[in-house]
Image (tube, rainbow over all chains, first blue to last red; front, side, top):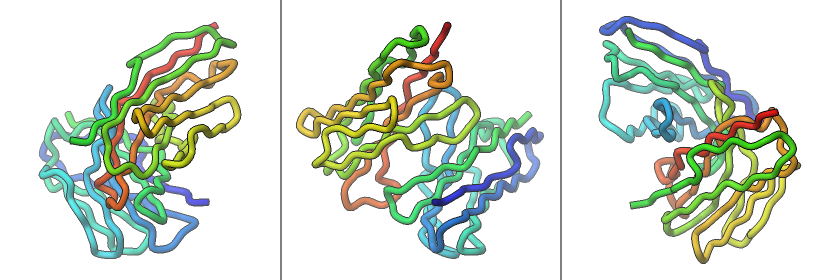
Length: 111
Length: 114
């Protein structure tokens, strides 16, 4: 089975600082990878997904970007964080569009 | 617009009791429906997945039902335990879609008390 690793688990960053969240996948090759954000009391919002190295699709315009430098590595970045970027960020992976195994999440607080 | 609505928003039950969570969706064309359990501060974990032809699926004390005609699903939890306290999320996939064709409900927050 697949395992999704994410780090860090929690992060507190000041407004205007850069961000880099990393996600790696074990147990499969060439997975589809996803970044979601979950605001408190809200559903999951898909931010980015990738079907292969260097292939990134963005779902919503925002202050964030994603990259996939290796088959099983997915990175979420920002050059300058905004207060509105606070939230719970989840990485997910799967062998198909409908297969979604989630990582443990990163709680980001922008102050 | 595809939507997934879950009810109730939150629920408190006594340990040992049963409960049923509801999910109504408007996603079309339908591919499959998943129920996830999400503990606070953790990633969601899949409980069940059902395709169009399946109308019930069990995973231990969790039993999901699907009525594709009325576009409704339910998750029944039997003999609840304190560890069942979590958010339960319904997710519906659109047939032929990509990752962007998953529609998430906002979840039902379940609290099991003594």
